[in-house]
Amino acid sequence: MIILRKIYSFLIDSVQTFLMAAAVFLVIYIFLFRPFEVKGESMFPNFLNKEYVLTNLISLRFSDPKLGEVIVFKSPTDPEKDYIKRIIGSPGDTVEVRNGEIYVNNKLLDESPYLNSSVKTFGGAFLKESVPVTVPEGKYFVMGDNRLYSSDSREWGFVTKEAVIGRSWLVYWPLSDVKIIKNPFK
Image (cartoon, rainbow, N blue to C red):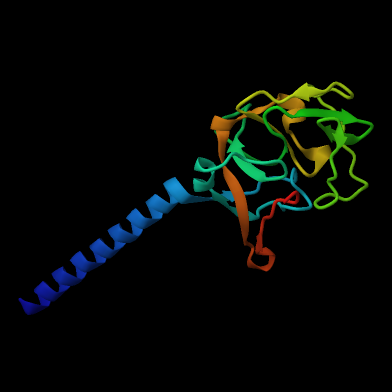
């Protein structure tokens, strides 16, 4: 009888510990941080295919995403997919592609902190070459770092603030590539 009581007590303690750990995990996952797997080459060379990024959800409650930040958001063309891209234009900004370069508010955007100077940017179905667009209130203009192989705002337009899941702030897998993701314009 004593053995059964000990087994029962152990099982109850184990279930309580598991439920507490699951509750803590859910609170963190739903309200604070969420993992994201980079799929594809659209953010190469700064983010690699199959890398895992931790996305900060809570910071969006206190401040809007800024130019240069890397965000995760629901795809405008398929809400079942999440994308990772860099913010190139915030509400009120004018974005233009001219001669392979990006201009924000009619000033050349210095992307040297995160892109090689040989990288050229070309227009697409939405953002045509030498035709500026103004980012509406509550929306963002985003691009992948691997400009030739990125489906981004140049093709399908703006990302709504509601579609933004969070700011990417830490690459945590593989362990050999762990790094904090910084905004190159701060």
